[in-house]
Picture (cartoon, rainbow, N blue to C red):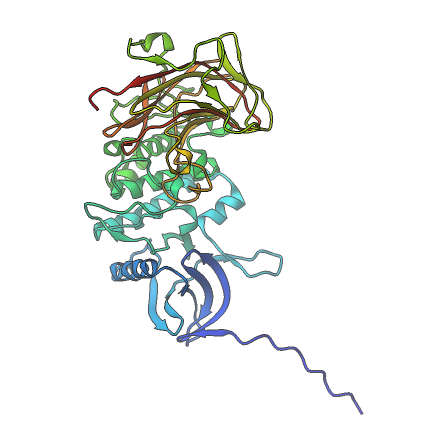
Length: 484
């Protein structure tokens, strides 16, 4: 007599949510999870299930976004929302399912987002980059035509559906009104100016940068060597579009998606074979440096900056009297040939001025000892988080709101990077921070790089040099504010 067949293990029953069977989780965000699901007719869709642990204001914001999004689901380049419902688990909604690719390792297929494509292919060619960003701009145009802003345009929120690239993740969509809260992903947010249509177009410019270079947005405006030598008209036209979309001055950016698309299609005159990316500076005239290259600024030698009698020296040129290290382990500092220097070692190096400074301007003449050195100024050190920093970070400048524990860099508004003059090892750069109740500006070699909200408090200042780096500081001066 044959043995009875052994009982085969059965897969666990699928979860249900309304009329949907949740088959597999395919995404996870701060406000909830996205599931591969089947509806009552067996059609596969994506279902976003909002977390019951989310703050009520976040849930209300997503529900408001869904209401604003009504009527836009039929737009060709916007992800379609198919159904919105509630259950004991809270709010959920279904969307059309993105294309997917088999991972080849037996795991679930991965929905094809633009970030997935970049991970797989790296940089894309000009034709693919133009086609993808044009699809995205069509979606942006549809939102703007309804008086809406997206606020979170980035590669992971751009999905391929039926071969068409669509703008997804509607959770931060809001009305375009006078005052809009700055939310989103910091690498794709403009450094200054109101949150408006040009902010969405700024994010599209950063996406285009990622497509063309294969680099993360935080690397902007660094370029790979392969693009530095590319002088084709198409690449130069895309370069010009990125520069304008990501201009520091909001008035110089594209003001509509149609204007952005027209710039992509515009034929370009012949430019020189070795040129640089153009830079728009807030409060300055346009400096047009055509073609590919790191963002550059006309550099002003220190000798031409001019030294007013009101400038007060904070370093006497012979020793570091009046300065101290916050802790013993913050590097080895010394004076050599009239400059403050530090050893290049694994310590994070800080040197603190032992006096408080009120509103005014700090000016430091510094130079890197090697390629990609990271150094700068921390000021108003008695502020929460230890005060902000103005740093040269190798190939870009960066402003940090304060210590990373108090102000995590992955939260909007805590960390901004922007282009500026990059000195070679041994070359000097003049860093200036002007702060007060009416002005708060960052400059390098006399050029305005960044504008921040005013500060009504001062405090001590520090010289900072990153771990494994070294730099020298020839002059440290302070000019008190008068009538500001």
